[in-house]
Length: 116
Length: 110
Image (cartoon, rainbow over all chains, first blue to last red; front, side, top):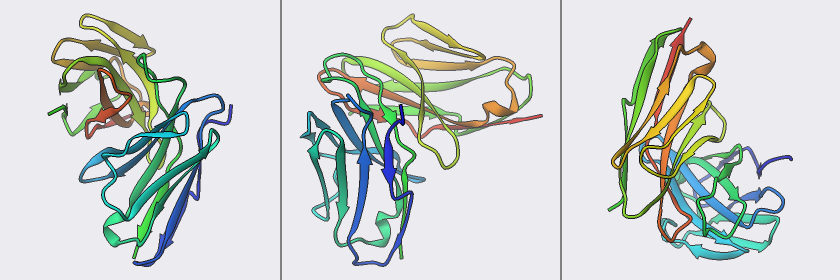
């Protein structure tokens, strides 16, 4: 299994530009999670999906952030417009089932975002 | 409010020097406590899940234990390749969300 795939691995952009991060979960997994990791705040959950439906987006910082999951094998996290404080590592993770039992989340390699 | 606190923030050991990492948590209705390892520039890698107080799990030089208020990750006779950041996370009832601690950065010197 290829594991969770994220692209791009690195992104450098200027303040005000739109940024799109992409994720392909592990095949057969029904839950997908977007996290942000910074030195100050550690790993924070932004949003998660079950069966392509957003279940909890309470961690999304503000309206500049949006996430979609158009099908079971693809998700995007978009920031528009980007700001320097959005600089962080963004991780995507997936887990096998419906969330009714304790489930392990498997993480991708992350996208390192730098907003100048 | 759900909270996870890890200590120490950083730990330096000599190869072969055993020690423990601590994860204290406050959560309503714990469903599971997870330990992950994170190497620089990589995503967290799953190590263990513990479900109830008294449970223990082992993998090579690592052993994780769980009480009603905290979990310990015991490292026996560590090697330099055990150097990484170790993250603890809790999952509470009726949700698939994980709440992470800020991690312990472990450095094992040869």
